[in-house]
Image 1 (cartoon, chains in turn blue, orange):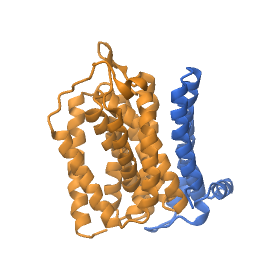
Image 2 (cartoon, chains in turn yellow, red):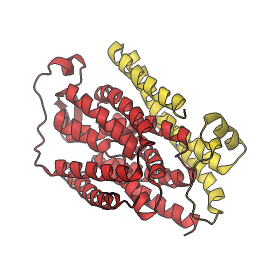
Image 3 (cartoon, helix red, strand yellow):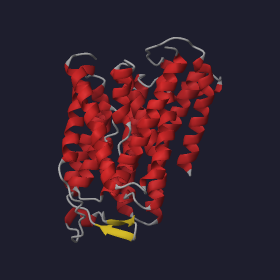
Image 4 (spheres, helix red, strand yellow):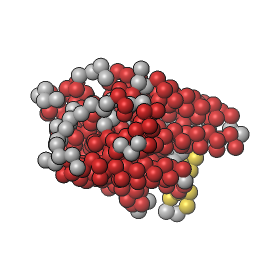
Length: 105
Length: 278
Protein backbone atom coordinates (compact mmCIF):
# COMPACT_ATOMS: atom_id res chain seq x y z
CA UNK A 1 0.00 0.00 0.00
CA UNK A 2 0.97 3.56 -0.51
CA UNK A 3 1.35 4.06 3.20
CA UNK A 4 3.76 1.19 3.62
CA UNK A 5 5.80 2.20 0.61
CA UNK A 6 6.24 5.82 1.63
CA UNK A 7 6.97 4.86 5.18
CA UNK A 8 9.49 2.18 4.30
CA UNK A 9 11.24 4.51 1.95
CA UNK A 10 11.44 7.14 4.64
CA UNK A 11 12.65 4.57 7.11
CA UNK A 12 15.29 3.19 4.83
CA UNK A 13 16.52 6.59 3.91
CA UNK A 14 16.74 7.57 7.53
CA UNK A 15 18.60 4.46 8.44
CA UNK A 16 21.24 5.28 5.88
CA UNK A 17 21.54 8.73 7.29
CA UNK A 18 22.16 7.40 10.74
CA UNK A 19 25.67 6.39 9.91
CA UNK A 20 26.53 9.96 9.14
CA UNK A 21 24.91 11.18 12.33
CA UNK A 22 26.61 8.84 14.73
CA UNK A 23 30.04 10.12 13.97
CA UNK A 24 29.40 13.42 15.69
CA UNK A 25 30.30 13.11 19.32
CA UNK A 26 28.44 15.82 21.06
CA UNK A 27 25.25 16.37 22.92
CA UNK A 28 23.48 19.09 21.02
CA UNK A 29 20.45 21.20 21.40
CA UNK A 30 19.52 22.56 18.23
CA UNK A 31 17.60 24.72 15.90
CA UNK A 32 16.97 23.41 12.45
CA UNK A 33 18.92 25.53 9.97
CA UNK A 34 16.97 27.35 7.33
CA UNK A 35 17.95 24.90 4.62
CA UNK A 36 16.10 22.17 6.46
CA UNK A 37 12.85 24.02 6.62
CA UNK A 38 11.82 24.43 3.05
CA UNK A 39 10.96 21.65 0.68
CA UNK A 40 13.12 22.69 -2.30
CA UNK A 41 16.30 23.10 -0.26
CA UNK A 42 15.63 19.87 1.61
CA UNK A 43 15.42 17.99 -1.63
CA UNK A 44 18.53 19.68 -3.02
CA UNK A 45 20.61 18.91 0.05
CA UNK A 46 19.30 15.39 0.17
CA UNK A 47 20.36 14.81 -3.38
CA UNK A 48 23.78 16.06 -2.41
CA UNK A 49 23.78 13.23 0.13
CA UNK A 50 23.94 15.43 3.21
CA UNK A 51 22.54 13.16 5.87
CA UNK A 52 20.51 15.67 7.89
CA UNK A 53 18.75 16.62 4.70
CA UNK A 54 18.12 13.00 3.86
CA UNK A 55 16.53 12.52 7.23
CA UNK A 56 14.46 15.62 6.74
CA UNK A 57 13.37 14.35 3.37
CA UNK A 58 12.31 11.09 4.95
CA UNK A 59 10.31 13.05 7.48
CA UNK A 60 8.66 14.98 4.69
CA UNK A 61 7.67 11.71 3.10
CA UNK A 62 6.27 10.62 6.41
CA UNK A 63 4.24 13.79 6.55
CA UNK A 64 2.96 13.00 3.09
CA UNK A 65 1.54 9.70 4.25
CA UNK A 66 -1.54 10.97 6.08
CA UNK A 67 -2.11 13.41 3.25
CA UNK A 68 -2.06 10.48 0.85
CA UNK A 69 -4.49 8.68 3.12
CA UNK A 70 -6.94 11.54 2.84
CA UNK A 71 -6.53 11.63 -0.92
CA UNK A 72 -7.16 7.90 -1.16
CA UNK A 73 -10.27 8.18 0.98
CA UNK A 74 -11.47 10.99 -1.22
CA UNK A 75 -10.99 8.84 -4.28
CA UNK A 76 -12.77 5.93 -2.63
CA UNK A 77 -15.73 8.15 -1.83
CA UNK A 78 -15.71 9.46 -5.39
CA UNK A 79 -15.84 5.93 -6.73
CA UNK A 80 -18.81 5.26 -4.48
CA UNK A 81 -20.34 8.47 -5.78
CA UNK A 82 -20.64 9.72 -2.26
CA UNK A 83 -20.68 13.43 -2.99
CA UNK A 84 -21.11 14.50 0.61
CA UNK A 85 -17.98 12.73 1.72
CA UNK A 86 -15.97 13.76 -1.28
CA UNK A 87 -16.68 17.32 -0.20
CA UNK A 88 -15.79 16.59 3.42
CA UNK A 89 -12.54 14.92 2.43
CA UNK A 90 -11.73 17.82 0.15
CA UNK A 91 -12.12 20.20 3.08
CA UNK A 92 -9.65 18.22 5.13
CA UNK A 93 -7.23 18.06 2.25
CA UNK A 94 -7.46 21.81 1.77
CA UNK A 95 -6.65 22.42 5.41
CA UNK A 96 -3.66 20.10 5.23
CA UNK A 97 -2.28 21.74 2.14
CA UNK A 98 -2.75 25.15 3.66
CA UNK A 99 -0.68 24.10 6.63
CA UNK A 100 2.05 22.73 4.44
CA UNK A 101 2.28 25.70 2.13
CA UNK A 102 1.61 28.53 4.52
CA UNK A 103 3.34 26.85 7.43
CA UNK A 104 6.62 28.62 7.41
CA UNK A 105 5.22 32.08 7.06
CA UNK B 1 26.51 10.97 26.46
CA UNK B 2 27.39 10.52 22.87
CA UNK B 3 24.99 11.00 20.03
CA UNK B 4 24.95 7.30 19.38
CA UNK B 5 23.92 6.42 22.91
CA UNK B 6 21.30 9.10 23.01
CA UNK B 7 19.95 8.11 19.63
CA UNK B 8 19.61 4.50 20.74
CA UNK B 9 17.91 5.40 23.97
CA UNK B 10 15.49 7.69 22.21
CA UNK B 11 14.77 4.97 19.72
CA UNK B 12 14.02 2.52 22.52
CA UNK B 13 11.70 5.04 24.11
CA UNK B 14 10.07 5.48 20.74
CA UNK B 15 9.49 1.75 20.45
CA UNK B 16 7.65 1.63 23.75
CA UNK B 17 5.67 4.71 22.83
CA UNK B 18 4.67 3.21 19.51
CA UNK B 19 3.59 -0.01 21.10
CA UNK B 20 1.44 1.71 23.71
CA UNK B 21 0.13 4.09 21.09
CA UNK B 22 -1.01 1.42 18.70
CA UNK B 23 -2.76 -0.50 21.44
CA UNK B 24 -4.60 2.39 23.04
CA UNK B 25 -5.36 4.74 20.15
CA UNK B 26 -2.99 7.36 21.45
CA UNK B 27 -0.25 8.66 19.23
CA UNK B 28 2.56 7.67 21.50
CA UNK B 29 3.16 11.41 21.75
CA UNK B 30 1.88 11.14 25.27
CA UNK B 31 5.01 9.27 26.14
CA UNK B 32 7.47 11.01 23.82
CA UNK B 33 7.15 14.58 25.01
CA UNK B 34 7.67 13.76 28.70
CA UNK B 35 10.43 11.34 27.77
CA UNK B 36 12.34 13.92 25.79
CA UNK B 37 11.79 16.84 28.10
CA UNK B 38 12.17 15.07 31.43
CA UNK B 39 14.79 12.46 30.68
CA UNK B 40 16.78 14.15 27.96
CA UNK B 41 16.19 17.79 28.81
CA UNK B 42 15.19 18.74 25.33
CA UNK B 43 13.42 22.06 24.91
CA UNK B 44 9.67 21.60 24.78
CA UNK B 45 9.12 22.93 21.28
CA UNK B 46 11.63 20.51 19.76
CA UNK B 47 10.15 17.70 21.78
CA UNK B 48 6.72 18.55 20.46
CA UNK B 49 8.05 18.66 16.91
CA UNK B 50 9.67 15.25 17.23
CA UNK B 51 6.61 13.94 18.96
CA UNK B 52 4.34 15.05 16.15
CA UNK B 53 6.53 13.02 13.84
CA UNK B 54 6.13 10.02 16.09
CA UNK B 55 2.39 10.52 16.09
CA UNK B 56 2.31 10.37 12.33
CA UNK B 57 4.50 7.29 12.45
CA UNK B 58 2.25 5.41 14.86
CA UNK B 59 -0.78 6.39 12.93
CA UNK B 60 0.72 5.24 9.67
CA UNK B 61 2.09 2.05 11.11
CA UNK B 62 -1.21 0.79 12.37
CA UNK B 63 -3.85 2.63 10.38
CA UNK B 64 -3.66 0.67 7.16
CA UNK B 65 -4.14 -2.60 9.00
CA UNK B 66 -7.10 -1.31 10.99
CA UNK B 67 -8.86 0.03 7.95
CA UNK B 68 -8.37 -3.22 6.13
CA UNK B 69 -9.71 -5.22 9.02
CA UNK B 70 -12.81 -3.08 9.14
CA UNK B 71 -12.47 -1.48 12.55
CA UNK B 72 -12.00 2.09 11.40
CA UNK B 73 -15.03 4.19 10.59
CA UNK B 74 -13.78 6.40 7.80
CA UNK B 75 -16.88 8.55 7.54
CA UNK B 76 -16.75 9.44 11.20
CA UNK B 77 -13.04 9.97 10.85
CA UNK B 78 -13.28 12.36 7.92
CA UNK B 79 -16.16 14.29 9.39
CA UNK B 80 -14.37 14.83 12.68
CA UNK B 81 -11.12 15.48 10.90
CA UNK B 82 -12.45 18.73 9.48
CA UNK B 83 -12.75 20.03 13.02
CA UNK B 84 -9.54 18.49 14.19
CA UNK B 85 -7.36 19.80 11.40
CA UNK B 86 -8.72 23.30 11.72
CA UNK B 87 -8.06 23.21 15.44
CA UNK B 88 -4.57 21.89 14.78
CA UNK B 89 -3.63 24.69 12.41
CA UNK B 90 -4.82 27.27 14.90
CA UNK B 91 -2.99 25.51 17.70
CA UNK B 92 0.25 25.22 15.77
CA UNK B 93 0.41 28.92 15.14
CA UNK B 94 -0.43 29.63 18.74
CA UNK B 95 2.04 27.15 20.15
CA UNK B 96 5.05 29.03 19.05
CA UNK B 97 3.98 32.04 21.06
CA UNK B 98 3.36 30.21 24.28
CA UNK B 99 5.79 29.64 27.16
CA UNK B 100 7.18 26.10 27.60
CA UNK B 101 6.21 25.99 31.25
CA UNK B 102 2.66 26.73 30.38
CA UNK B 103 2.73 23.95 27.83
CA UNK B 104 4.02 21.52 30.43
CA UNK B 105 1.34 22.41 32.94
CA UNK B 106 -1.34 22.22 30.29
CA UNK B 107 0.00 18.85 29.28
CA UNK B 108 -0.14 17.52 32.81
CA UNK B 109 -3.66 18.80 33.32
CA UNK B 110 -4.89 17.23 30.12
CA UNK B 111 -3.34 13.94 31.10
CA UNK B 112 -4.88 14.00 34.54
CA UNK B 113 -8.23 14.83 33.08
CA UNK B 114 -8.01 11.88 30.78
CA UNK B 115 -6.88 9.56 33.54
CA UNK B 116 -9.81 10.56 35.72
CA UNK B 117 -12.17 10.13 32.81
CA UNK B 118 -10.94 6.64 32.06
CA UNK B 119 -11.29 5.52 35.61
CA UNK B 120 -14.96 6.34 35.77
CA UNK B 121 -16.99 3.18 35.48
CA UNK B 122 -18.09 2.86 31.96
CA UNK B 123 -20.09 -0.10 30.72
CA UNK B 124 -19.66 -0.46 27.02
CA UNK B 125 -23.05 0.68 25.94
CA UNK B 126 -23.08 0.41 22.23
CA UNK B 127 -25.85 2.43 20.69
CA UNK B 128 -28.25 0.70 18.35
CA UNK B 129 -31.03 3.25 18.47
CA UNK B 130 -31.99 4.37 14.98
CA UNK B 131 -29.91 7.39 14.01
CA UNK B 132 -31.48 10.82 14.05
CA UNK B 133 -30.63 14.22 12.69
CA UNK B 134 -27.02 14.88 11.81
CA UNK B 135 -25.83 11.36 12.44
CA UNK B 136 -28.41 10.00 10.06
CA UNK B 137 -27.70 12.60 7.41
CA UNK B 138 -24.03 11.83 7.55
CA UNK B 139 -24.58 8.08 7.61
CA UNK B 140 -22.13 7.61 10.43
CA UNK B 141 -23.32 4.25 11.75
CA UNK B 142 -21.58 1.06 10.71
CA UNK B 143 -20.38 -2.26 12.07
CA UNK B 144 -17.09 -3.73 13.17
CA UNK B 145 -15.65 -7.24 13.30
CA UNK B 146 -16.22 -9.10 16.55
CA UNK B 147 -15.18 -12.59 17.59
CA UNK B 148 -18.52 -13.97 16.44
CA UNK B 149 -19.19 -11.86 13.37
CA UNK B 150 -19.84 -8.17 12.58
CA UNK B 151 -21.36 -6.03 15.31
CA UNK B 152 -23.41 -3.06 14.16
CA UNK B 153 -23.52 0.25 15.99
CA UNK B 154 -24.87 3.75 15.63
CA UNK B 155 -23.36 7.11 16.44
CA UNK B 156 -24.82 9.75 18.73
CA UNK B 157 -24.26 13.47 19.22
CA UNK B 158 -21.94 14.07 16.28
CA UNK B 159 -22.24 17.84 16.77
CA UNK B 160 -20.78 17.62 20.24
CA UNK B 161 -18.11 15.29 18.93
CA UNK B 162 -17.23 17.83 16.26
CA UNK B 163 -16.82 20.61 18.79
CA UNK B 164 -14.63 18.44 20.97
CA UNK B 165 -12.46 17.64 17.98
CA UNK B 166 -11.62 21.27 17.42
CA UNK B 167 -10.29 21.40 20.95
CA UNK B 168 -8.51 18.09 20.49
CA UNK B 169 -6.84 19.33 17.35
CA UNK B 170 -5.64 22.53 18.98
CA UNK B 171 -4.28 20.68 21.99
CA UNK B 172 -2.59 18.25 19.71
CA UNK B 173 -0.68 21.01 18.01
CA UNK B 174 0.23 22.65 21.30
CA UNK B 175 1.34 19.54 23.10
CA UNK B 176 2.40 17.21 20.35
CA UNK B 177 0.10 14.50 21.59
CA UNK B 178 -1.79 13.71 18.45
CA UNK B 179 -4.97 14.36 20.36
CA UNK B 180 -5.67 10.66 20.44
CA UNK B 181 -6.54 10.87 24.11
CA UNK B 182 -9.36 13.31 23.62
CA UNK B 183 -10.42 11.77 20.36
CA UNK B 184 -10.85 8.32 21.82
CA UNK B 185 -12.71 9.73 24.80
CA UNK B 186 -14.96 11.90 22.65
CA UNK B 187 -15.84 9.01 20.39
CA UNK B 188 -16.14 6.55 23.21
CA UNK B 189 -18.14 8.66 25.67
CA UNK B 190 -19.87 11.38 23.74
CA UNK B 191 -20.56 9.58 20.52
CA UNK B 192 -20.99 6.09 21.94
CA UNK B 193 -18.77 4.30 19.48
CA UNK B 194 -17.45 0.86 20.49
CA UNK B 195 -14.06 1.19 22.12
CA UNK B 196 -12.10 -0.62 19.43
CA UNK B 197 -13.74 1.50 16.76
CA UNK B 198 -12.87 4.62 18.74
CA UNK B 199 -9.25 3.67 19.07
CA UNK B 200 -8.78 2.64 15.47
CA UNK B 201 -10.63 5.61 14.04
CA UNK B 202 -8.63 7.85 16.33
CA UNK B 203 -5.52 6.25 14.98
CA UNK B 204 -6.67 7.03 11.47
CA UNK B 205 -7.31 10.63 12.40
CA UNK B 206 -4.39 11.57 14.54
CA UNK B 207 -1.90 11.15 11.75
CA UNK B 208 -3.77 13.67 9.68
CA UNK B 209 -4.09 16.13 12.53
CA UNK B 210 -0.44 15.76 13.42
CA UNK B 211 0.59 16.26 9.81
CA UNK B 212 -1.17 19.61 9.81
CA UNK B 213 0.64 20.72 12.96
CA UNK B 214 3.95 19.22 11.90
CA UNK B 215 3.86 21.12 8.63
CA UNK B 216 3.76 24.38 10.55
CA UNK B 217 6.49 23.29 12.98
CA UNK B 218 8.69 22.22 10.11
CA UNK B 219 8.45 25.63 8.54
CA UNK B 220 9.51 27.20 11.81
CA UNK B 221 12.54 24.99 12.24
CA UNK B 222 11.34 22.97 15.20
CA UNK B 223 11.71 19.62 13.56
CA UNK B 224 15.27 18.50 13.95
CA UNK B 225 16.67 15.44 12.17
CA UNK B 226 18.84 14.15 15.00
CA UNK B 227 15.88 13.94 17.31
CA UNK B 228 13.08 13.10 14.95
CA UNK B 229 14.88 10.25 13.28
CA UNK B 230 15.29 7.83 16.19
CA UNK B 231 11.86 8.74 17.45
CA UNK B 232 10.31 7.95 14.14
CA UNK B 233 12.09 4.66 13.58
CA UNK B 234 11.50 3.42 17.12
CA UNK B 235 7.86 4.36 17.06
CA UNK B 236 7.24 2.76 13.70
CA UNK B 237 8.63 -0.52 14.92
CA UNK B 238 6.58 -0.39 18.12
CA UNK B 239 3.41 0.54 16.27
CA UNK B 240 3.68 -2.31 13.81
CA UNK B 241 4.09 -4.75 16.65
CA UNK B 242 1.22 -3.19 18.55
CA UNK B 243 -1.14 -3.34 15.60
CA UNK B 244 -0.60 -7.07 15.33
CA UNK B 245 -1.59 -7.47 18.93
CA UNK B 246 -4.76 -5.39 18.91
CA UNK B 247 -7.22 -7.95 17.78
CA UNK B 248 -6.17 -10.39 20.43
CA UNK B 249 -6.17 -7.79 23.15
CA UNK B 250 -8.93 -7.46 25.69
CA UNK B 251 -10.61 -4.07 25.84
CA UNK B 252 -10.46 -3.93 29.61
CA UNK B 253 -6.75 -4.58 29.73
CA UNK B 254 -6.22 -1.85 27.16
CA UNK B 255 -8.11 0.66 29.23
CA UNK B 256 -6.05 -0.12 32.28
CA UNK B 257 -2.85 0.27 30.36
CA UNK B 258 -4.04 3.59 28.99
CA UNK B 259 -4.90 4.88 32.43
CA UNK B 260 -1.70 3.75 34.08
CA UNK B 261 0.51 5.38 31.48
CA UNK B 262 -1.42 8.59 31.59
CA UNK B 263 -1.42 9.02 35.36
CA UNK B 264 2.29 8.57 35.74
CA UNK B 265 3.12 11.03 33.03
CA UNK B 266 0.58 13.57 34.18
CA UNK B 267 2.10 13.78 37.61
CA UNK B 268 5.59 14.18 36.26
CA UNK B 269 4.69 16.93 33.85
CA UNK B 270 2.67 18.85 36.37
CA UNK B 271 5.40 18.67 38.91
CA UNK B 272 8.00 19.98 36.53
CA UNK B 273 5.83 22.56 34.87
CA UNK B 274 4.62 24.10 38.07
CA UNK B 275 8.14 24.15 39.37
CA UNK B 276 9.09 26.23 36.36
CA UNK B 277 11.68 23.72 35.33
CA UNK B 278 11.12 24.11 31.64
